[in-house]
Image 1 (cartoon, helix red, strand yellow):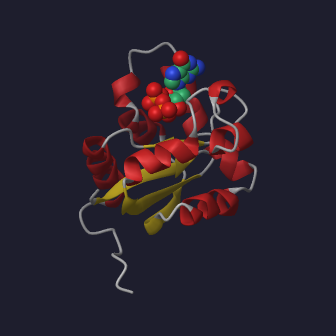
Image 2 (cartoon, protein in one colour):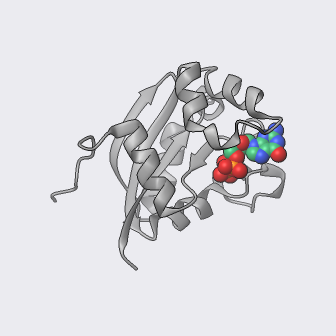
Image 3 (cartoon, protein in one colour):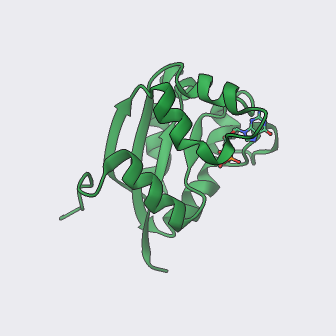
Amino acid sequence: MAVEQTISIIKPDAVAKNVIGQIYSRFENAGLKIVAAKMVHLSQERAEGFYAVHKERPFFGDLVAFMTSGPVMVQVLEGENAVTKNRELMGATNPKNADAGTIRADFADSIDENAVHGSDSAENAAIEIAYFFGTDGLCPRTR
Ligand code: DGI
């Protein structure tokens, strides 16, 4: 399996719970490396643009309001099978259905406030990385 990159976002609920470090530890313990990271408070436009695929869904307004309610931590994770590995660490979208020991089982309260985002394919990962970090915002690990 080739080395991949994926976007992870620690959402405003988990930032507010002060568990950025605990979530980072899970990435590191799974062999994923952080090669870019920044804290941002998304504007309405940035949040709407990021979730544009969902704009016709009934929960879109609530999703954008939640994602702009406080800062988020955005990182690029790199490693073998990074897209799938991050999705496995996250657990199911609805924390009620998330396997024990996953980030959402441990830190999310509801489907509306579910702690983390992760790219769902390598194609979307490339789009999301460009959305947050442009073409030269990554720091390849040189040692
Ligand atoms: O990739 P995921 O975050 O697991 O899920 P997704 O890309 O299908 O949806 C993006 C976010 O939108 C998800 O993290 C929470 C929200 N969402 C998705 N489906 C529903 C939802 N929110 C509500 N209230 N109801 C839904 O059915």
